[in-house]
Amino acid sequence: MWRWVASLPLLLCVVAPPAAGDRYWVAYEGDDFPENEGWERLNFGDGPANRTLDDGVLTIDSLWSTNISDFYKMERPLNPGPGETFVMEWRLRVNQVVDNGPRLVDPGVALFSDDDWALALQFGVSGFRSGFEDNVSFVFEAAVFHDYRVRSTDMRSYALYVDDELIHNGAFWEPTTTRSRISWGDGIQGAASHHDWDYFRFGVVPEPSSSLLVLSFLGAMALASLRRRM
Amino acid sequence: MFRSARSVILVSVLAFPARGGIELWSGDPDDVGIDNQAGIVTIEAAGVFKFQSLDGEDLADISLIEVADGVTGTVEVHVMRDPADEVGTTGARDVNEIDLTNDQGASLVGVLGVIDIGGDLGTLGGVTVNDVTGSLGYIWFADDVQGEITIPDDPGVRPRFSGLRSMILGDLLTPDFSDSRSAGPSGSAAKTRESRARSGILGSACLG
Image 1 (spheres, chains in turn purple, yellow):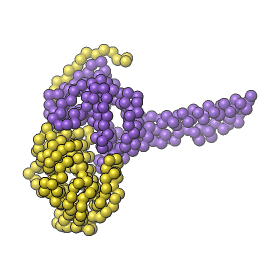
Image 2 (cartoon, rainbow over the protein chains, first blue to last red):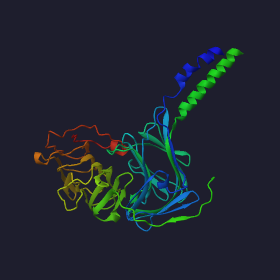
Image 3 (cartoon, chains in turn blue, purple):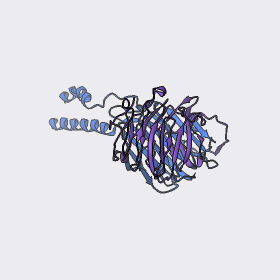
Image 4 (cartoon, rainbow over the protein chains, first blue to last red):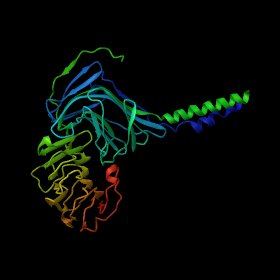
């Protein structure tokens, strides 16, 4: 027993995840307008759009003009450290999109990492597309809420879940732009929409595999110790 | 689920000042989608389009100028601060990529302030790169583009091509890099867009 206890510091050094970076978690839950919760509101063209808050849902309505983009941006370091995972999740319903072009997308989410790798998703009533990846688009049930989650450990590749189902393993794209940031909202001038955001959250969390590894290892050591005592 | 009921709050339309972004100087706004979050310009019909990109008073980046699937005809693109400035004063700090691969017409005319792609209907006659003040990362052409690329050697307009990392020319025939000092095949483009990774690279310009 004492040998096990004495070896604990060494074990922790071996199995503990590397020193974490600045883990953080930002959560917008629709309790107030985003600019009152640390987000910067940007709008272009004929904006801003009309907005309502109702029971924790932010509704953005730009149907009166296709020449509006009205969205929320936060600039901050984003990347996960070793043993960590970047997570971005949101719940969105797109009720209507008006576009004179063929694409029929208007709301969107954009992410630029600390080292200039980017991800952009553009949403329509019944599907969405990746702005930086060729031929990456998905169709699903129209005009209902869907839960989206992006997970990445390296900000080069990502896994995209919709309604807790993994639907895409994608790649970030490298533009030349700088300034790490995240934005969401009515992103596109040239289209109009009516859509609802239930929440938008992002942050860096411990990588599940690291936590599981630590727990598994400690469990195995405890079991081995018990066997020796028996 | 633990949220208390809230009454509807209607926010009136306020006069927020525009803070730049990508703006269409001229061209039909119904034929363009501008994603200001990601810096993506999607051209949805043939025509002439002139853009600028500002972050407040300063120039800002454009991540991507692309042509939507199925567009036919001639697309002409300018990026400039003043639409009257036809010689191409830079209207963006960076244009990372121009993607003309989805234009189904064989003729593309792209004038980007920094690049002049000229040609006749049916065949692309050639590509002429003019003076550059900003930077341009990538230029992509459809596989059926034919013609030649010419980089004029005119010290009077240098520096040119600041930031240009690669031209992905598809099946471009007879590439002619007349400026040997600043052009040459590299094949080192960071092609992260999967379908493009399958396209051929017959020539590329790698310029500092």
